[in-house]
Amino acid sequence: MAMFAACPEQWRQRHILKRPEQNFGDRFMGNVNHDLIADMLRMKMNGYWQEYKTLTDEQQKVLVRERYRDFWERQLEEEGEPDWRDLDASEQYTRGLLMGLTYVDLALPSINPVAVEERVEVKLAGLPKIIGYVDVIEEGKIRERKTTNKKVTKPTSKWRFQARVYQFILGLPVEWDILTRQAEPKLYTAEEFPDLRMPFSNRDNTERLIRDIYLQMQDLWLRRGEHEAWPQTGYFDPWLCSYCAIGPSYGATCGAWS
Image 1 (spheres, rainbow, N blue to C red):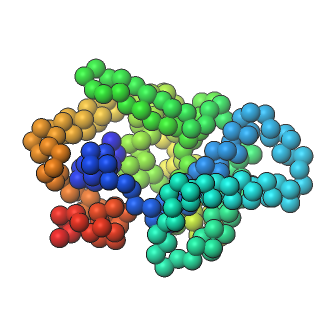
Image 2 (image 1 turned 120 degrees about the vertical axis):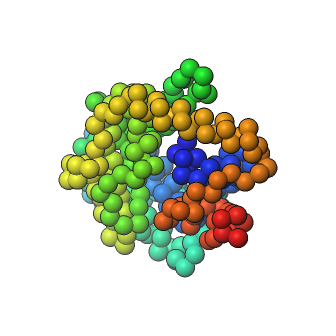
Image 3 (image 1 turned 180 degrees about the vertical axis):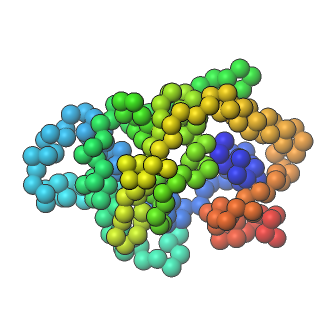
């Protein structure tokens, strides 16, 4: 839904024409980090954290390294080698490992998960079922994890919309943990930067946003169908096109760039 709101043509390519997403380096590293941290959080949720804490510092690092390597190799098997552009793959491997170690050291001790990668859903009258997967649910809040290239201390519009939908379903405030992909990874949290916390949002307004997006989808489907291009509004975004499989950095087949 957030993709459609940003660029209907990208949504048509991805979800109607089933064009695969571009496997670029940042996305690859983000997926590996996401899987690694989810695995560590499940370990904590399932009662193994006390055992983990009895390990020496070096033993803990070895455990994280082994899990990280497994998830990296699994991602390669499933997605293939990503487009690293001008980056060195081995350097990115090391950088991604440092990201994982940073989050495990700085954030994991204070997180008390009751659910990890939890599927949530809601059915509004007249609309298809809405399904999402929440990164972490704790007692009294939702915690979403994002990886970025540089310091980010405010949620993007896409993150805020996602958070509103989760709040609509679960009725909990949302906090973001931001982990950078820099040579020396940095972690930014709501404790330090209050803008990374979203308190309760207006349910009526959230439902209106959801319905408006669905009605726009329905309108474009009826007027333009499967084969005619939909509005290419991602062209006006400062970064969206550079990550799109039909944008100028990859296929370059989007009409907005012809």
